[in-house]
Image 1 (tube, rainbow over the protein chains, first blue to last red):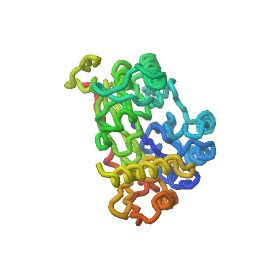
Image 2: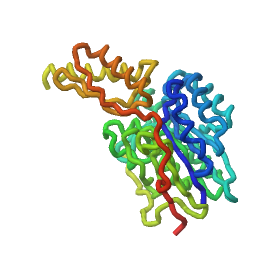
Image 3: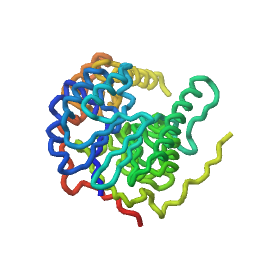
Image 4: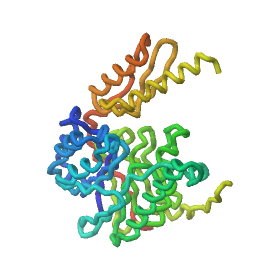
Length: 256
Length: 92
């Protein structure tokens, strides 16, 4: 069994120094790896990233992260990545990492993801260049996620995102902002790529548990949702991650 | 829709944008509800310092309003209890 600790939307900065570390000191006794689902900083400065790195340094489990929209705010995302990688965090964006755990191998494919909405109410690459660029960005990240998941030959596959891959875990948020919180394209990538578990953040008023259209486990680990420093999940290397009672994704006809 | 409600909507949005775009905050998760001359703030912020700063920024944009800061902080969130681990199950 693989014990996964996960959290998102930490929004860390120097003003929070010392508040996270005490709750992670003995993480290795409870979890085999720590996954961070984006919005690691308040506005994405190198100073904030360093404050978080100081907090996470020498944590006794492998750590994997994706960035979130907040981590891009000050155009220092590359610096944020380098600082976190300097303490051993695997920072993924359209990439993956394989980590040996308890005789099995866990593959984590990660991307920030992007918005666009969900089946029946999503955007398309039509009209103004800005709208095309918005949706093309979302599609490109989802396609890259699927490629990474398919390439993993591991007993457990985890998709690590910031934006949501399904509407279930957004319940509690206002419907009007769903298109800014996630994309069905991410859910399709998760289903086609065969993720055992998908973790995301971004939706602070959302719901922890959900399923993709194909019935794969999705968990919103934004700290305001989970109410703890991290959430814990037990994943079985022989598990499929899909609920066999859930029907295959329906084909959605595009509206005119 | 009355002109008053339009003004309140614009005022609310202007204040929300200020919270998001203030480089000291980057705060997207506060809901501002205006009722009479009171502004109710709800949502989550990470630290107590940011909680106070949110109220200060709102007060700058809503002069004359009484600020009811009902935001909650996420500072020092506890570890999950022993029973909190969710077993996602094996292949059935």
